[in-house]
Length: 239
Ligand code: 13P
Picture (cartoon, helix red, strand yellow):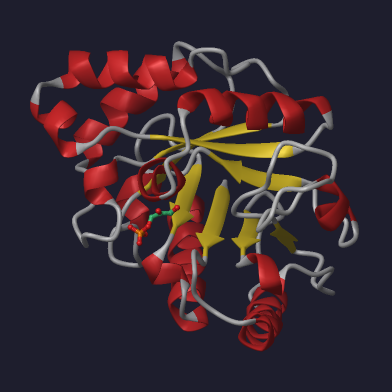
């Protein structure tokens, strides 16, 4: 199971360090199953090689060039300094707020795949598509997966319906199940759900057939809240 915290534009370098220290202490004392993998995506200024073996650090965003004149961007050289080999690609906020086209996203995917990075690839429909029914949702998601190598061995797919992100309203288990089944017919990659995941719903989300974890925004920003999510997920798994 994968539980990943996306800090988005929250936390500083020093608060990220404090967060990781607390998280690491919590993981050590809780005797956590090795097969629960914890990831943290801090803002770029807080990327570092932290001394916490049980938490993998990834980048929320990275550009598809080795290095060069790309103001404001970071790439494999900057990530390599800290041994970071995990990157998030295609988040709906990158697509919507920063105008990342599917073409750019495909380029980023190919670039980081070529370098063997672990890629968390995010897909998800907006409300108007969801309201048109599951077949529309599937054909939209299919388009977001076009030209993405769904057989890539280091791929993780996060299904994050845009209407469920930051709204406090997670998708229903049946809706998630329907999408997981569809995605499972396309790829063997681990499938995550994201969108208003919190301690109160993590157990039902990871109980959905085919769902192998969660990508968590808001409820991961406080370390105690993220730890509670981890704890409940572990309890559910053991029961
Ligand atoms: P929220 O958990 O705040 O809905 O955000 C989900 C998300 O976008 C994770 O990438």
